[in-house]
Amino acid sequence: MSLRHPVITRFAPTPSGALHVGHVLAAWQARRMADAHGGLCVLRIEDIDTERTRDPRWLASIYEDLEWLGIRFDGEVMVQSRRMGVYAEALGKLRSLGLLYPCFCSRAEIRAEWESMARAPHTGEHMRYSGHCRDLPEERVSELLEKGVPHAWRINMRRVEDLVGCPLWEDLRLGIRRCVPSTCEDAVLARKDTPTSYHLAVVVDDYAQRVSLVTRGADLLEFTPLQRALQAVLGLPTPVYAHHLLLRDARGKRLAKRDCVRSVRFLREQGMNPQQLLAALQCAVERGGVWEG
Image (tube, rainbow, N blue to C red):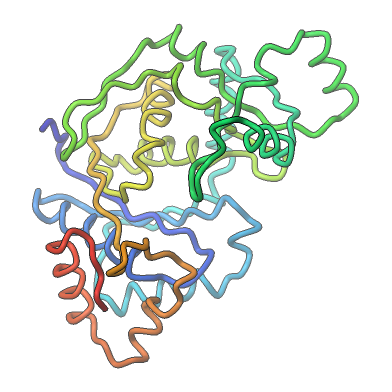
């Protein structure tokens, strides 16, 4: 393990719904790992998706639940919606390196193409973009831009690999891993209505908050190679990762925001105190992620 010191972890909720036990696990893991190494744990509010985070009551609810839990954080809270200029600078650097291209495909068109393929996705599988607009003739691109056709900006992962090769990254559970950019999706990094993406913002923000250990759910493991590639082309240091198990019920179903019965607010109203909740999480981790609360 090659942790940088001081060890800094982070908890980064999206204020689009009630805090649930899965979020508490993520916050608890981040704080626990920081304390184990004598480090810091910072808080970040990931609210770049204005459609999902427009209701201010959810943010207030998150702060209230975190205070009730007694999970402390260090330093100032970072709020992504206040950092659009920083993301624009990062996007500009990628554009200057020739790594971005406009994609004129609508979400509906991408979905239709994906679902028509022989390997149609199972429920919950990430819908990957085929790269349709990657090699459009320059004349066609100019024509579409001049007409004002709606578009997103995607990163050309083949060119990323030409530029930085296949960089390494480390996970505490999985060991040393290699990122092969050309096998990653050409992800959207900006849209007209959202001038940055989760992938770009998280990389830039981890650097700004000096995060050296990223603790997060195993559901985000598939995106780590893409984020590692972004770190490489932007010249940013790479944290160590720790992808922890997700909470599931006794039938193996993943717990999610829509399971309001397991929200922190519901458990509070049922009379559970913070110590009982954290103890239940500890038991769930020891059972391999099975939540019996």
